[in-house]
Image (cartoon, rainbow over all chains, first blue to last red; front, side, top):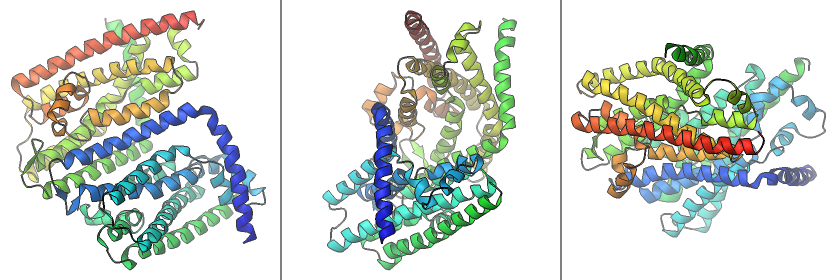
Length: 266
Length: 272
């Protein structure tokens, strides 16, 4: 318990330091945010324009789809916000030998890497996500019960862990192939499929989205519980199970990659 | 005239050559594009499955499938752009070098992009288009695209390319007056995704919006060539659209020259 408290304290110190550097270019941040919001607006304009022509899509209404869309953005945003530095692992750190500097410190490596960068760009994803979830609640698209609220937060956390774990797995591949950033970007693109109901995709894609790149569990599957009261075990609980599994797998893969890195004689 | 082409053509040729070298990266790039196309393919299949009529926004389901793939490939050919290079040059100062040389900066950048475009026509556009034709005839039961459609469409694509390059040059001028060009590029790309019809056919927009769009160059960047290719714009309509495109090429070229004169003055005054 003491280590957790210690790490939380350390994180706060790192975060404050990082924010000071970032705050120096506030305008850059707002322009980046503006850009992101406009790109979101484009995707949403698509949905809106399409639903001028059809009342429902495979049984889902526009309002429900907007909830799924927003619900998908929140875990993605949280992961983007906190663990953006993992991209560096897949891209540069192995090649440039940056791990040496981390290994010298008496701190958990994963923690060090992750707290070095807080990607405030993710504010866009979080804003959009929160807005559409809130809107869905206000419009009564989702019924609110204490249990649902609790499970909502559980699902968000589990979803973020899934995102982080997938990123960590792919970043760790860099220990073997030096630069895994192309694979990481491709996988991240696949996550885009998760914004929409997974049932519209062909079977092979659905299988991928539920197994090796389980992004279907981040938003769509749990949202069926929130929207149409699907079975808790098949949705939110399954999501938690997958996130634990993936986390354990990704972290051990990361550890394994590190030993390989060390033994390469750094 | 030939000297002109000989000089500037080397920039294009070099670009083509270097693209051949970085093949691995390129294939991954193609894969990512395909992923994007397929998301929309499935979305449209689901949308049409839920539609009461066979036509949405003037497109049947088969036509919409073609639209998705055509708009993606064509916008890939057209929207190569030069503003990010201008931005980079300005930020690292190498733009000064480019201005000293007896080469027209804009033409230099245009030919470089032309090289990329030519490469992308061969790899993979021609293959995708061939694949689309086969798919059209076998799976969709539609006739093969006639030369009367493809010919003007190719011309339209070329015009679109120049419209976009000259537009992007004007946009690139922003790099001289602000350091936030990269953020603004994100905004530009996002907005263009919607405005050029790449995401959704312009015919889905409310009539008022479509009217406004007809006075802007954006539909000419992707939507027009796609519509000509699909035969939706044909005969006099196609000629009219091609004429409009040519007009935009001229207008944006002049605008670029005008903006450059202003920027040049500013740079000189600031002692650049």
